[in-house]
Amino acid sequence: MPDRQDPPRRLRPAPLLFEPDALVAEPERFFQLESIEDPAELLKRSTELALAFRAAAERATDFQAIAAAQLADPRRFDALSAAEVAARADWTADYATRMVEYGRGLLRQRGAGES
Image 1: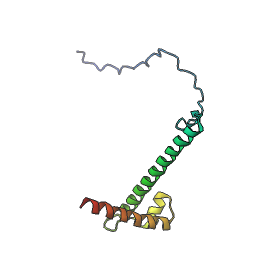
Image 2: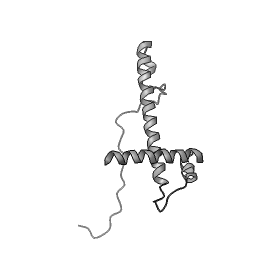
Image 3: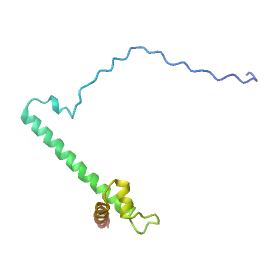
Image 4: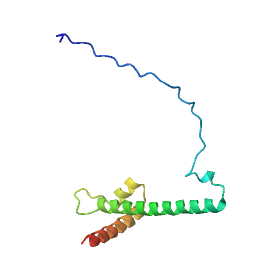
């Protein structure tokens, strides 16, 4: 084993074994709805998606409210005011107050369900 320090080896880039396809702008796709030609099937599938997105939005709002309530919990040493919660979430102070209260209700329900 040599005593001298060898200079660090330079890594060579791996050779390309193929040419990448030219970037072709693909038309925007929305859950393949644009490819459904039967209006009855299109109505059915788009309604399913609308309901799924609505349910997801409602769940996300519940989680926002829970987080707002936890951040505004007066038992926390770093509790935020409704105005501070509003600033973080880009809400009005009034909406933040209502979300904190809604979140507290959800937390009470969650706590009652665990007991």
